[in-house]
Image (cartoon, rainbow, N blue to C red):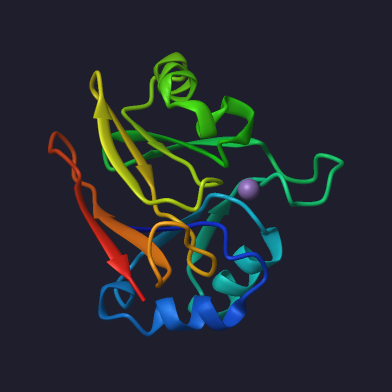
Amino acid sequence: MKIGMVSDSHGSYSHIDLMLAHKEAEDVELWLFAGDIAMDADYLAMVTDKEVIKVAGNNDWPGGHLPDYETVDIAGHTILLTHGHLFGVNFGLNNLQQAALDVGADIAVYGHTHVAVEEIIEDVLILNPGSISRPRDAANGSFMVMDLEPHKRPRVKRLRI
Ligand SMILES: [Mn+2]
């Protein structure tokens, strides 16, 4: 199954549109939105007609209308999806990696830093698709796709718009 990952669009539908114009976005079957901000995830769902699983970012409305994290079981893998600010991702990935282990996830997807990351820490694949509209690691925004199959290592592609 092909999963798309995007985060930190911060209200820019035009950058979501640019992402969707990318060839690798065409056959994404499920999107994970790692927060900031929720209405962009709703826009993504509307224009793609695909399922979008979303979590709250630190810039999303307070009040708990969105979960802080989701655990997604798919294609023989378990993904922990969270924005990352609650796990101190600006200061390291250990808390996030531990949270993934705690829920039995082999993959963690986060955002918040606006910097794309692909790293394996003690059997947990940790991914940050970066920011699609306000990247801090390059001029152009980034997103990710991955192919998930049971009993296989995820194949991740880091993409820029
Ligand atoms: Mn954030």
